[in-house]
Amino acid sequence: MTGVSNGLSIDVEEYFQVEATAGIIPPSAWQRWPSRVEAATYRLLDLLAERDCRATFFALGWVAQRHRALIRAIAEAGCEVACHGYAHQHLRRLTPERFRADVHRARLLLEDITGRPVMGYRAPTFSICGDTLWALDVLVAEGFQYDSSIFPVRHDRYGLPTAPRWPHVIRRPAGRIVELPPLTARIGGVNLPMAGGGYLRLLPASAILWAVRRMNRQGRAAVVYLHPWEIDRGQPRIPVSPLNRWRHRVGLGRTAAKLRHLLSATRFAPLDTLARHVLAAEE
Image (cartoon, rainbow, N blue to C red; front, top):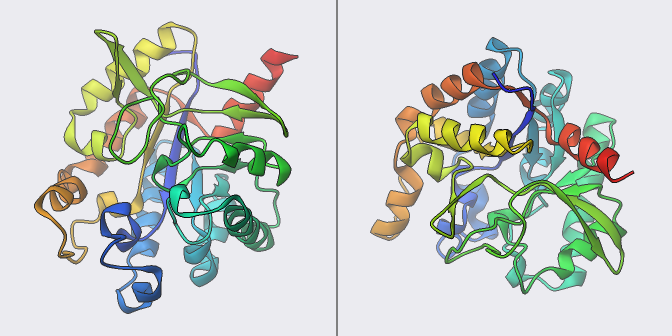
């Protein structure tokens, strides 16, 4: 087992709030779909407790407002509650002013529920990209200490392939912020996504673990993520395109076992722990 603590993160959102369904299930229609986030998130908490592991839960404000007891349970389990925004909107659909209002509303809500400061943020769909880097200035102004939104890959919905692949400090006009990018492996001059989510559902757990250990051998922490709906095989089917249906449903029945494998094979911690280590190295 490596001596480096890696970051485990869970984006707490409903199955119908993903980017693949944004065109057919707008926020105004969310209330009409059955909620399933609570049971799946409690199941993830149980999986973490089996291995005495703590993680960061990036909670969506819309979910937190409707499931306050769930957010409190996450905090009471010793996990970090961080911010995923309020309404799960891709940043390219927001102005800086609307983005600031969204994260401000979500952060105040989460702090009210937990009684603890919220230090970290992750953008919906990892949508801090080359043309939305202004969001980092907003996060600094709002008092966030770290971000985990910049995925250093090429993708049709997100990504900044030239960004550093490891935890680091970003200096912006508004100040500095720690960036904790999702895990990638650089092979043949290309950054391959290995961080979890759909990649965890699609790839064998051994491949993710290989990438984690490869990053650790460089003395750097790896950041892995997933969503509660990714362990929920019983979620309703949504009428999306064949590609989006495959993206959303591939491997749902295998995710929990893969997570157990990762938890047994390496050490994970909440992301605020990683951020503190990065800042300490800067001093």
